Image (tube, rainbow, N blue to C red):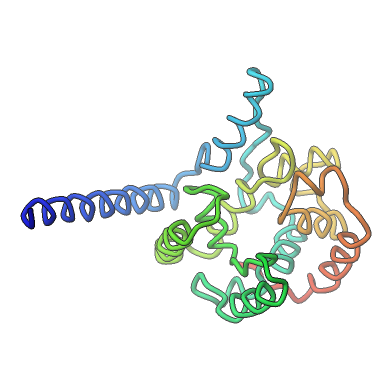
Length: 227
């Protein structure tokens, strides 16, 4: 029986390693080639097509230099102020999130960096579990090891969800302002950045609290360091 247990254990370890190699191979590939459909895109498209089989996502890749500097600064200011300095994890932010969640008695803050969010968007799902968080951390280390900060932010801005079926900065700029991603101004960028935690909700209702947050982000953007 012990022999069978060892074989099973080796098989499980082998499968886990194979999955990590698969993830790492994709991270290497996407350092030079743009991702097509991410895990989050696939999940969202499946949801949409259950209601409308002909539904399609709105998504168009634009290179880093054709994304407004205001949007880059706004997203960093709103989502991850220490983006250019950390190595994938904002330990102070994680501590603050844990304290806030403990105080509220439920999960109200995550403390995830842009790199962590990219790992989740590319490969995982929105579900919350310890196993998923561990996998997210492993993929984040891969991303930070292989990719430059510029490439991480470029991919993130092109694949993150910005509304019901809208993914990436170009789709967001077109949907909300009928502009290209390169034409977004400071206020428009701050508005879009504040939507990111819950874009489908804020697409429908962007209330006074969100507007106040957008104003705070707008005030911090000048000091946001981007790659």
